[in-house]
Image 1 (cartoon, one colour):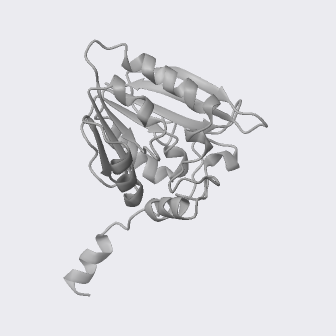
Image 2 (spheres, rainbow, N blue to C red; image 1 turned 90 degrees about the vertical axis):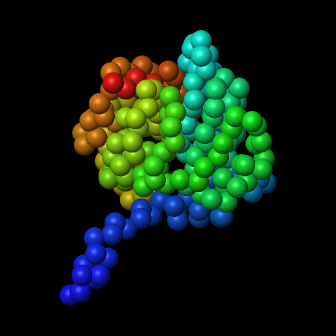
Length: 225
């Protein structure tokens, strides 16, 4: 076998997340909405969004000097737009190029920047605090690990996840882009195996119990070493 063929085999194939997320927006799989880009009820339902915005706002405004915030998985920016005014700079990242182009036109502010990046593959932007809201639940354990290895570069990481109510076995693996772990009566816990994310401190900021046994959306602040 030629050397060129060997080198090609060593190239890591991209995760299926990008294609899956592009399909979500192209086919409007997260809701029948009139908008061209809609990130689902988790980004629009007031009983989910408002407690999150209030909790994160309280954290951000506790600093004398505003933080640079990186919103990793910003979606349609319905949530992020409520936090921008409390930051020094707000960098909003998503994997779908058309969505980022749409947001760039729609949400023009001097200290807001949109970037199209794959969180697991690309270098992440600099910031003091990373927001990762209902992102990890959609991807495989291997991809979660790739993302977590980069989150340790931030001083603060705020992670929001949709998990089962009560006791559950965390971190059951899934195929990226094919639903979330709730279907396996599981959810992400970054401190548990196989991730064992190293932090200095953790604090739950808010927890929203959903109706009809649809689980809990919990937001946790991690202070990194």
